Length: 65
Image (cartoon, rainbow, N blue to C red; front, top):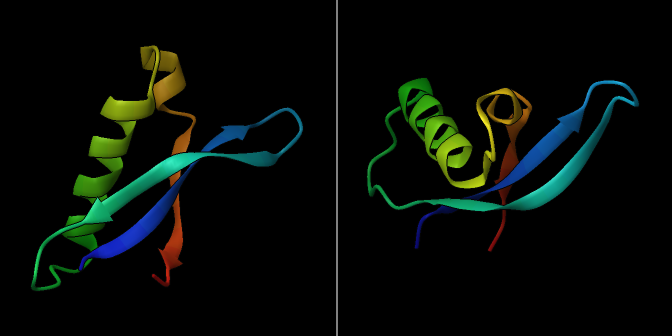
């Protein structure tokens, strides 16, 4: 089973992170920071409603399953 990362939308006015979903890494071998960038792009495509909204989406820490 892959690693699961929580996806947040950041409200920069109140500086709060609002959880909106999760993204699962399904690769068997870790690829370092390049993989996290790929997961961030995927999360922005899935959860971003507009181009401006996509910049507000970030990944959280890895969650234990």
